Amino acid sequence: MSRLASCFSALHQQQRKALVTFVTAGDPGLSITEQLMHRLVAEGADVIELGVPFSDPMADGPVIQRASERALRNGVSLRDVLALVGRFREQNQSVPVVLMGYLNPIERIGYQEFARAAAQAGVDGVLTVDMPLEESEEYRACLGDQGLDTVFLVAPTSGIERSQRIASAASGFLYYVSVKGVTGGATADFSQVRQVVEALGQQSAIPVGVGFGISTPEDAATVAEFADAVVVGSAIIRELEQQGNEAGVDAAAALVRELRRAMDNRIGGGV
Image 1 (cartoon, rainbow, N blue to C red):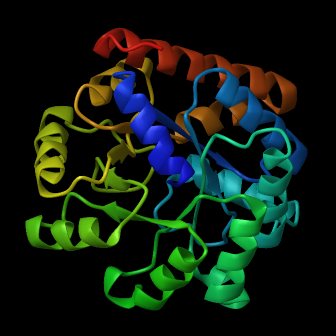
Image 2: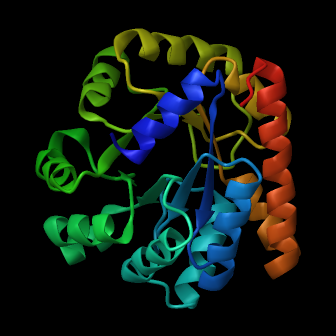
Image 3: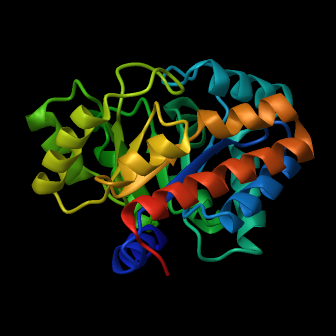
């Protein structure tokens, strides 16, 4: 059983929901990212989603775009991100790490070489934003051969038939985009999101996470009522951006602590 599958299974038994925290690798520096990953886990993050810096992050709003730009100015590459995961694994062998990024850096390495290197580093899953389902067979096969999960996005505009096909191809979890737009945008209509997520849950047994537009503990608690996972990114990176370095790590960790508390209090779960 993969780390992601084990994580979701354990949380289900505890009647808790997964908190997935996104950070951009290398913003403001790789050593800070490594420190932050451990702090977020200590404060209640169940899965770390690690952003691979890219020059044209089309799905991301201004906060994550700026984080990616700062990381690129630091010279952070995909191989640097894999090395970062390897260092994280020296201290933590249990928390799943999912890479989130874009296809170009992976294609430059090659699917097979990337999958091999990612698995060796300790990556558990990959979400490639601009990989269309229809063109993903070879990509998914390469990841699967190395025991890596392929996480796909489902958008509000995907429609029932396409959502079903995406769910059948995905592994690890399915990432539902709660708003039409980019990360860090307007807060979603969570009553409408609930309807879609519950429909997805009836179509497939894969866990469904919800992200985009979730920024406060109240938002996270509301989504935890109906989704298997809550994904928060821009709000965490905003704390880093505003505070900087160690103070930013403290502020981001404090936010995650509040997100975790709100989620657990709302659904009454606990260890």
